[in-house]
Image 1 (cartoon, rainbow, N blue to C red):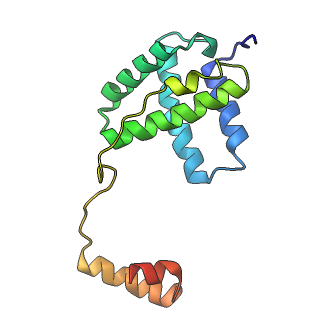
Image 2 (image 1 turned 90 degrees about the vertical axis):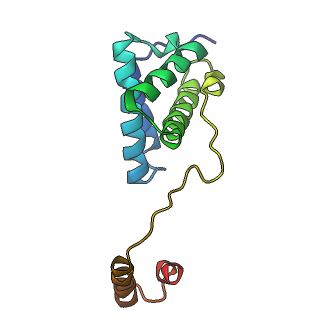
Length: 146
């Protein structure tokens, strides 16, 4: 099967349009933002055609992205997970080899590494409870927060 040439920016645009009906707006925004870094890298590396991508070039992107964004492991993981989904989608439209997505390496996180330990101020918690009691009484959010 022959690959069909496709510019990175055009591929991202097609991907986001295709996923529009199945992704929440916040997820769409996150994918657009994360893939924007990939487009920028492609521009810097003069990658004008996704057909040129290999496992090695995707690894170079990962190293560049980690250094460029000074990313913590959870952020790097979300960046690479989004790229993997995008590359997998690109395989379905003959822009990259169908198995290229499997070469996108995402870091493994230790237990609890993808969560934060932040104390909620008592006054803020009381304000949230008051709001939930007034406007969302007995809702799942109210019960969970309580």
